[in-house]
Image (cartoon, rainbow, N blue to C red; front, side):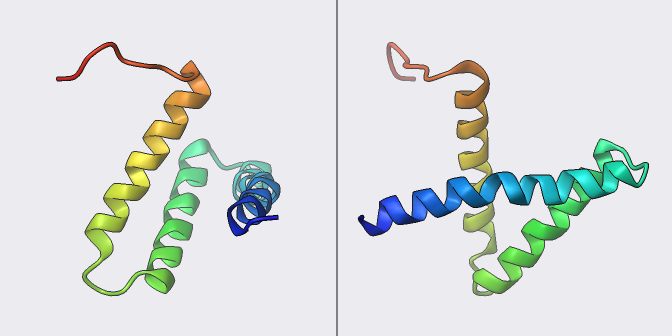
Amino acid sequence: MSDLTTQSTIHNRMAGEIVRSIVKPPLDAGGQMTDVLVLLESVVLGVILVAVKMGGDEIVLDTLVDGVKKRLAEQRLGPITTAGSA
């Protein structure tokens, strides 16, 4: 199994567990989705503080948000191909 396949397997297995651990406790405690999003913000901040050297924040955040937008569109709309370029 290649490193990429191994990492994909790990990511896919862990993602559901992590999402549940972020979403369920605040809602079970009577919170709203805004509470879940604030918790997510805190988690993203913590990971970036640990993983990214000072000065690299902007490009990492831009890349992260771009990836989230792309994957969200794929999940909600399916794969889309464009006919041309701007």
